[in-house]
Length: 137
Ligand SMILES: [Zn+2]
Image (cartoon, rainbow, N blue to C red; front, side, top):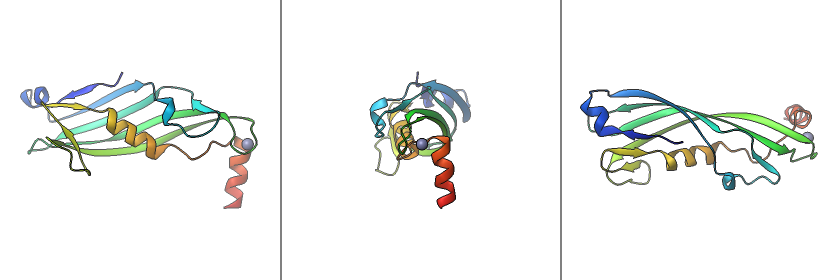
């Protein structure tokens, strides 16, 4: 489940920064690697801070694992990834660089989707192939 952030409620409680930890099932269609899928829910740890102008800064980490066939040798492969994510949510419309939020509530779906898209590797390699890959570089 992806939680919402109740900005208005947080401001009323004068709780201007807080942490969120949750897991959710990633949308497998985001993955563009043949025969590879998410092998666990995405683990998310976020920290948000409500600024004086009601903009909300969010930073954190996503962790996820992929498993399937090695993109090079087709043996079984599984690998975990961690990505840093951050974003700014402004009250009202998004201006393209920031995310917008309305009615005092932030929905994180688009933010997480964007973060995951940036973090997804172009291919999955097994231990042997990624070791060889490292030697070549
Ligand atoms: Zn391999």
